[in-house]
Amino acid sequence: MLETLRSFFGLFWIRFSWKMYSWLTSPYKVTLGLLILIGFVLLCSSGRLRQQLLQAAVVLLAAYWFLISPLFSALAIQGLVNFVPQDTGQPADAVVVLARKKEIEGQRYSSAVSLLESGRVSKILTLGRHQSVRTFQLLQQRNLPAEGKLSGIACAWTTKQEAHSVASVLGPQGIKNIILITDSPHMLRSWLTFKGIGFSVTPYIEPLPSSVRSSDRTFLAMREYLGLLSYAVLGRFKPSTTSLAQLAQEAAEEFPPERCTITLEAIRDMAS
Image 1: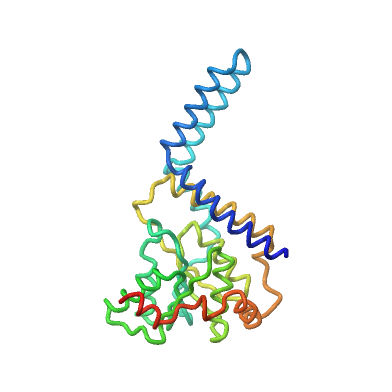
Image 2: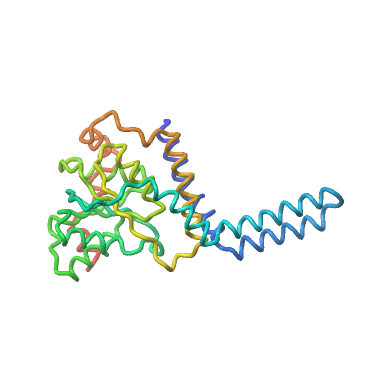
């Protein structure tokens, strides 16, 4: 029952936070909303109360424009990256590529293929159907074999679900050492989550595309700070008391292979 409630509120948080992200990253919408609020204050209040409310609205407007400035966005993301270990170039058994919206995913799938091509990893595991297809197409473009090298996962929505679904696929193969690819805001929470369930994780940060606005960067970072707080409170960063193999068996019940694992054959069918 408790786990069901956690899953429900987890999905609610995803939808709610991305809707808020969409609104807050639009300076015109936020500024217009605050200007309407200022106008409402001027019309519907008087005296000392009007002055106080007007000052508060102006402060909110100024604070918002500071938050979406390039300076603040850079500081907010750097505050997350500072706690992530550097990639030292060591090999791993597999590279796991976490999914993001296409506008912010950068070149992560090309980076994963390059890691395979260089010999640092022998397998690629992607999160998402379309993402698996793009990775397969990149392998074809570089004349690299996909057989036994590429698979995907289709059922994960949260970072916790991504970690557990990856365990359900890689755990039975005896794979523990992974390279984890995601963007700079998302890496700290992802690294701590995967490490907490027993993976040995080498973080590989994919920079956000230069086309991503500073307002988007700010609220991607703010969303991660909230995510870190909630995951810490829920104990999702604590080392697991069960082995990775045992956790993989438990995760397979939540993410059954016949429903959630994307085989190479299925990827080929989607790509054709």
